[in-house]
Length: 295
Image: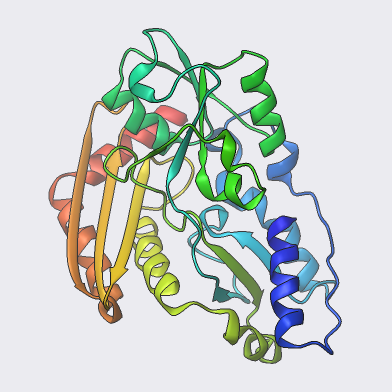
């Protein structure tokens, strides 16, 4: 809802005479909280109801956390704009410890992400990783009630909701490479709504769009979903992109990584190079093992 209100405010600033109304909806992803996303259908659970509303003409656009958007959109839909990225890092949240390194053996860490699970398990095998679902308030309440010694959340969500004080520390990209699209807000429309697309062009942030499209291309190449511990992260400085990606088993025991640099405008070629480099390290075999483990 914060994201929807943010986009509304941006649109009203651009088009003061425009009437922008928010159609609040609860998706299946919001409703199913007792199981990991990888067990109940993955990313599409957060967008389907919104796409139906657009298809029926009840909504003109949908606002998403880009990391929750499937790599393949249904026919008839398109991403019209990607807003400037917020902090893409993972945040360490705990009431008693300052970092993952301080947690004692057997401490329980909560996360909703197989990617985070794999990366933490590889570096800190003495910790116990347990699923953590629900909205931000629910996750923080479970931490405060002692169900977890620490939880890992997206820094962007905590900052946007005015809770940066809950962050004890940030995980660097070397410790926890972000998910494709993490920290970015995307706007989805029906692909035949060129009138809406034209109005949204002003919200598109070119560097963020180039970065996340490169990241998502890597994820798409490997069938990216919540069932796969895959990270992809691009940074752009002075028109040059540095693109990194990682694929691992959920326990972190097997992992491969690759990185390339080049002109940000060549993001499609850069993502293809990373895919080839990962495949050369047998990433497909790792992903096959991942899929078998969740069946």
